[in-house]
Length: 147
Image (cartoon, rainbow, N blue to C red):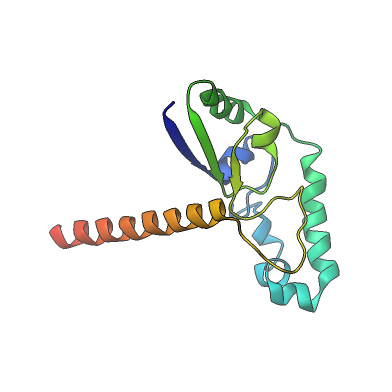
């Protein structure tokens, strides 16, 4: 069976009603300082604020459902070995039926302790993303040189 890697982000969940972090008018970061709620320093400084921030995100999940795009991506699993690599922290891909999802920024439905660890698959995916990003920079630089 052929393999497919699907990279997804905020646009996928936005259609289900989840606010993105960076939208200019209603993005999450227009209401919060990222350093206060999404960093180890913010956690050490004000755990209650960090917990409130993530609890608000979690409570939003109960009011949303996977949209058609989630479902169509999952349908690919009928004919392909699919790995979903997402920046989203929701569980909408899983609720749509996705069986192999890697959340690059964690999952709202799973809480971790203060000690961070990655399994081999997560390390490999991160490495692949870094390689792809570097290749994009090289290609962009070459285009600028030739133009």
